Image (cartoon, rainbow, N blue to C red; front, side, top):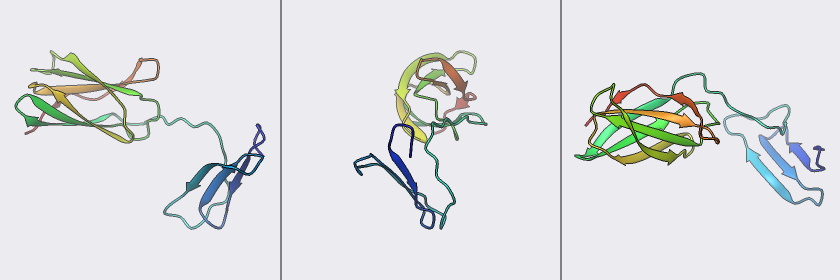
Length: 138
């Protein structure tokens, strides 16, 4: 039983986890893939701290438009990506702010710039990481 009265069930021999309200209503349901069984299940707050750097790929899709692929494996704190762009590595200006969308965020920005960098912002808008500067391909 969980502190607020709900029940967490780890189904053990099958890779399933569920949480139920006191009245039996299903509140949370998860299936673990790639394993046959597991020993225990816990319900707790979790926050991922990414050990590496933010990955960024930039490809020009039109003369004045560039598509960016942004990912930070292991991170769970980034809420927005701030995109900077410029004609050189040393003269970047902030050009866009985009919401994070899962494991990899793909954004298209209006820019004829050759160089790009992204910064990850937390829920308070504070920068918590940045990519290396990347030259756009294409």
